Length: 287
Image (cartoon, one colour):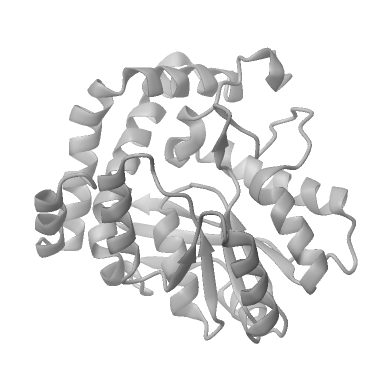
């Protein structure tokens, strides 16, 4: 969808609910068939993470997962129509508002669950905090260009590439009550290193950067995620902020890993990174 400008434009002109449904159907009936390796990886990983489920239930989860991926891609064309209370329900809205209204910088920390772009847009919509997102461009330049175009309308500032670290530090130190939006489950070396799922992995990548930044600028972590409930409707779940001033790095890592790891397993039918890792690899420590 992202590589087809005509289809992306068409989805924009359709009602958001219909566009989301079409995206799900295209994904499960077309994309899934052409991405057999990713489907097989997701199946193998799900069997490791959810051995309690019968195979037929895991297959149903995998089908729902492809539907969610397609819906999420299609919803990129209509994010501005979904960033509202009619489509996003915040769990404990009053507490969440209190967190966003508090002083000091904030690192909003999440995984690719539900619709992660809508989550980024929602936190921007919910607060007057200046926001910055950290991203990596897809390898396909056409998809990268379309993704940048789509995100420019709702995400605000975003940064990636070689100068990202300096830009992030400048943002957190020079803007009052700045927020940094980070996706923790990035793929590196053909593996997703967070959440750990019990593997003996040292913090690296975005998690390692976030820990250093938090201590340097006095930022608190806000772990949260957005899960799809039905169609283009979602619930925003969040965790009490984690403060480096009162917690050690191992304590923060354990809390992030527990909250987002449990969410990734509970909502494996909506977790994108399930097909980007190999939990059967001996390096994982799970088998």
